Each structure stands twice: as structure tokens, then as C-alpha cells.
Image (cartoon, rainbow, N blue to C red):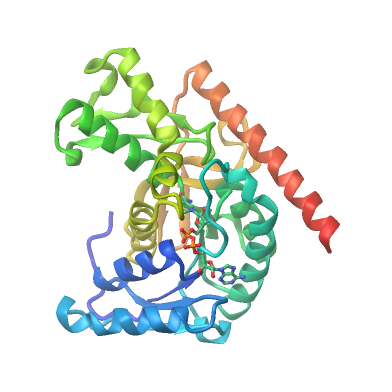
Length: 322
Ligand code: TXD
């Protein structure tokens, strides 16, 4: 892991979609002093207002990062990282897949415009349904696969990590949790690879309790949607995307679960799905192949099958609306 941090970097992160996740992410990136931020949205005035608000917080927060709000992709030119959060969030009772067509059209459109002005950027997709939107973004961008990725595994693992900490009543800092697979009901939490300071949770908790924590992790997004009624989670999603942005800009070579394009790894081909990756300045540097049991591998393949079906559905729906 690199420890040399540039002291006055000129990094630029553009966030397309200035809603809940986009604005929280802008705040994290700027206040952690990682990069200047361009916030873009289709709604006139919203990104400009948010940017001004964040600029006015700088004196109190003590940082000099520039946050700029815009409706024009020209202002995003030469971004190092582009984060796509544009699209609709879920409403109570909706699955992530219910957002398919609406968000597919938005993602296709915004990626085309963003990449035209920043052809060398790394793209992080946040919009749901995550794995399918990442695939569409990659296809539209025509970038090499290691430069396009989806954020979900960091969030799903953080949720699992939280529930383990709450159950064991230990510090969340001592816990590493691993969740692979698609960002949906078929995600694959891996208790064998989830540890408390190196001790697998399978040594510390009975199977029935672990099953309950897994179930809560799977429903982590829905639980918050049900509580909030309007909108979905955004603080932990923004933190998760921010960790990925930091790893890329500062070449940290972090090992994180990321929706990455598989080309034979885990016996899967041509699909974006959550797997452990080493993340550095060029994007995904390496996909790590864990030793999975037969049932874990089957769960990963089942998740991949559902993602593939939704990619086909999205492409059919998009073709029918052209
Ligand atoms: O783990 C994950 N990947 C996720 C994904 C965690 C949390 C949220 N997840 C998904 O991200 C969620 O289901 C949505 O699909 C996106 C964004 O969620 P957010 O909560 O930020 O939604 P908002 O607050 O509705 O913001 C969306 C913004 C809003 O300001 C719109 O005006 C804007 O997107 N939008 C656009 N901006 C630019 N261009 C276009 N075409 C556009 N369409 C909508």
C-alpha cells in the first residue's frame, strides 16, 4: 500500500446526480480533503445551491477544496474520477430491479456525456440496480473494464460489519466483513471470511444468529427505505463510494469488494458482479479469487444469472424505446 500522499493534488471528482448520495459524497470528498468536486444534476439550481452551501462550510471545516455546481458537462472536463449517482431511488415495496428501465436510460445518457469530456476517468457507478447499471455504463463508455466499476460490496460489507459488531458488542473497527455477489436479494455474505480481529465469526456465533445477521444485511437497504418512506440510504453509501474514490486518487491498493467485470474468474464471464479487488490509481488492478465452497460458488453463480437476465431485459427495454 502506498503511503506517499501528494500534498497539493489537483484531483477532480465529478459527481453526476446531486441527490442524497451525490451531495453526501461531495461533502465527504471535500471535507476529507481528497479532491475538488464538481456536482452535476439535471435540476437547475440544485447542484449550484448545494455547492455554494458546501463552499460556505469550508471556513468552519477548515479546508480549501473547491466545490462547483453545474448543469453543464463541460464543467466536468478532465475529471480523474466520475461517480454516477443519477437516477431514481427505491420507494417502499419496490425492488432495485423495479428501477431498471428509468435508470438505464438515465445512466446511458449521463455516462455518454460525462466520458466525452473526461476520456481518461475512472467511473464508479452507484445507481441501482447496481450491477446492471455498471454493465450499461461500461458498454456506453467504451473504456477498458478495469476503469469501470460499481459500488455495492463496500456498503453491503459495512452493513454486515455493523450487525456483527452490534450482536457481539465489540468495536466495529475490529471487524472485517465480506459480502460478494450482486447488490440485491441474492448477494453472498461470507461468514467464513468475516472476522473479528482475525477470528472467523463462525467461531464466535451460532449458525442461527449468523443467518439472522445475513438476512438483515440482505434487507439492509429495504429496512432503511421502509423507515424513511421517501428516499433511501445515503450516508453509508456515500462513505462507501468515498473509500473507493480515495483508493483510486491516492493509489492506495485497497482490497475491497467491488462490482467488477469478470473474464473467467470464479467461472464467470462477461458480467459485472461483486468480488474482492485491489483498487489503485488505474482502477481495478487485480481481481482476487477466493477459495469458495461449492454452496458459496453456487450462490455467486445464481446471483450472476439474475444480473445477466436483467442486463438482457434492460437492453430489450432500451431497444424498444429508441
Ligand atoms: O449501494 C448502492 N449502490 C446504492 C445505490 C446505495 C444507495 C443508493 N443507491 C442508488 O443510487 C439509488 O437507488 C438511486 O438509483 C441512486 C441515487 O440515490 P439517491 O438517494 O441519491 O437518489 P436521489 O436523492 O433521488 O438523487 C438522484 C439525483 C436527483 O437529484 C436527480 O435530479 C438526478 O439524480 N438525476 C439526474 N442527474 C443528471 N442527469 C440526469 N439525467 C438525471 N436524472 C436524475
